[in-house]
Length: 426
Image (cartoon, rainbow, N blue to C red; front, side, top):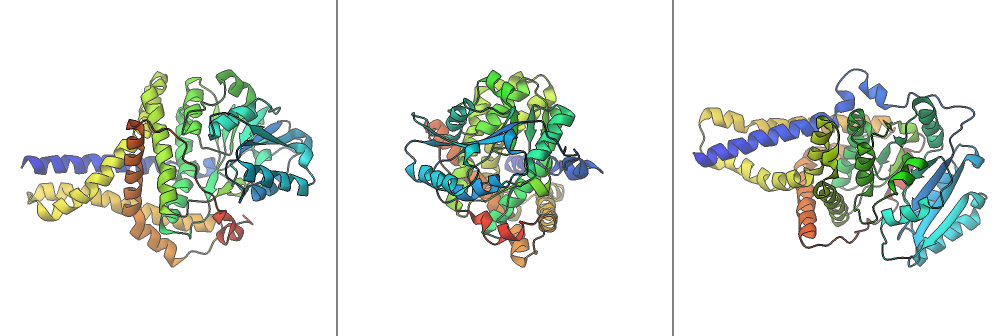
């Protein structure tokens, strides 16, 4: 009987965790008006006043960097008010040559600086620190090397800065190859809920992990905190917590017409390695403990919940199969059987919400819904959680063995093929 009670306790805790996670992800759709508030309400000015320096950290990105620079060339913003700093490590000759070829073919190379640095750290935060030293704009924006940036982005950020005085503005980022491998579908929907909803909840509490790109910082604030930690595996979450401790003013928007497009990893190995780095970065921040100095209890609870997710994902992936199997093996009293069904009901709710998000996603980005997409959601929810659990175990193993090397995600430009072009008009 004791084992039955332990199983039931686990099922209840799993259900609570899943409900909290679902509640946070659906924050923008939870009450009338929130979804509209998540969209940009600021009116772009005809005469923008904010100047920007856009940093493009590029490592092993020779295949995609040209497309990113081409999208930046289309930005609808006064040329005198923005510049681009592409930063590469000296050892990455292929990417450096690809950047030089792109600059030579364009008519705006005067606004682009190629910064080549040397040193032991070949990570994104190390590159960002190198570039920050030469930035001239009032605000510093981060653009990943595979991004497709929309023409109106800077005007939207300028409007938000002018009308709210925000020192940190997080724009939307969206994976676009939703009809790729089964896990890519769920990854795209995860981004859709994260940037379109979850981060708005975090910003409302002033406790922001931030996203890795399409985020804009007051250059003054960045310089005051000394830039990014070069050893951080999730430099975005790390600096987000640091700025939350300072009480900086965050604004988040998700407007599809200016959302930055990216690609989800197209191999399971690539996805697991990417999530391993993210989970390990969360654990770095968790154990460092600075987040515990956040002023409000709600902030600490939210950040603690977010940073401990790797542990929860690992435990969930391990015990889900055991708990489900136990339903058919362990003989329980009728009341306990009913309690044991609660996680399955929550799983059903999660799957149903993903189906709704899929439908809304394809409508938002003017894509044709596909039977494959619906099947990926229905059949992939549990396997996707197992992949997240595997990534968590791998992250914990790397932490225990002191392996902090940066595992680079390979980008192939999948968001620029088929679905990416299909959504280009949005």
